[in-house]
Image 1 (spheres, rainbow over the protein chains, first blue to last red):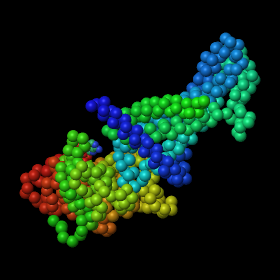
Image 2: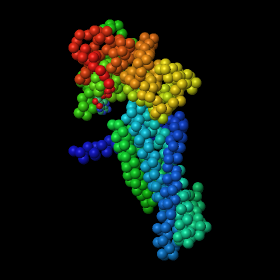
Image 3: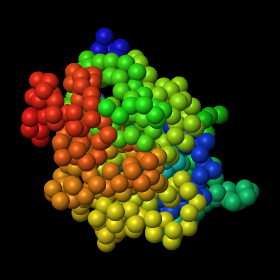
Length: 261
Length: 250
Ligand SMILES: Nc1ncnc2c1ncn2[C@@H]1O[C@H](COP(=O)(O)OP(=O)(O)OP(=O)(O)O)[C@@H](O)[C@H]1O
Ligand SMILES: [Mg+2]
């Protein structure tokens, strides 16, 4: 029975999230009126995670460069390290690292904030005041994260590539000029309109989706919070857990979609 | 008991409500006429706040009906409910101020969101309501900086800023010193008389019902067990009423 209840709870939660997303899409027309709130959320969220994204992105770039670089140098191909670092940052590492950090730092804060509103009757107050909580609370947060996540991903990719470059020079003996040539080469397809390859677009599209997922899951966890401070704690925990799980699952399916033959 | 005349604007018909295994309301029936102020008294945790929440459609009854202005709140459309709520004011027990908005922004919120009034007009109305609850000069304070009683009064200013026809007050006096408490009582009375506001006041203070109420209901075990004018209550010989009024609350 307990298992069925948990299963039922999971379906209810999933249904609520989908419903919330549909409502947000339906209220995109309110955006001009909500631009101030979007900007607030964007800055608050951005400031919270910027330094973490830079630090982690840089370190991941170094790790990727070192790990694959050592293998490449064994077969004498270390000159290609720039290509590998650039592509793995743009395709996988950048979007994934950025969204994990966003889920942990910003998603948890969103869930705690809305959860506190739920348990202190602030959401009820909005409802009695005939203020639409989707338009007033959820929409600005979803839009802010949908913009913030790809922008931070670009930063993460960039510092990762820089970090990889340091390692390439100090550990693998690949000159910086060569490194950056291979990076630029791999990130350009001259025939295309904006001369950026699919890898960059796919990565940024993933980030865009992840930003929305994190915001929707965190907002719905907060709104559904019940039972005082304990309830807010539970909402925060499940928001982070569920966002990261869903990011990983969706990441697989989007990768499969973009790179299937 | 003031009866004849006015038509009823709020009516609870045998409303029952349980949260999980916990039964809160058991066939609660009550009626408020247009322009009347009804006070609800009862022990702590008995479901007074839950009753008020039913009256604005925040909670739906398990059985029974809540009728407000000829709308059954369990079948009313979303749009009608929104419009109905725009004519209502609700003072939450803990104030329920939006934490990241200043006092002034909190009070201005319903006007900002639901009207096209110019900023200066809104500002003026907000200052006026803040003065009404004796909170001049608090416009820029943030909710965490306020005492419980101040928060309560900001909540009251917000509930009144749209000049509602129906107002629900959940314990308007808690956390206030006797002097301010009395002035809030007179404010509620004054609004009812001057603007013909219909209201339900949840309170446990006899001093409050004597000033504000046209009629009082006592609630226990999830339903109304006694009803009358404030005068009838303090003169009542009914043992349960006497016991009830003599009980110290909170
Ligand atoms: N959403 C809810 N979920 C579960 N239980 C609830 C909910 N709302 C209220 N209750 C329970 O219903 C009962 C009545 O609550 P209510 O807040 O109406 O009491 P009250 O009469 O207003 O008390 P007080 O005078 O202390 O404010 C309480 O036991 C409370 O725990
Ligand atoms: Mg109460």
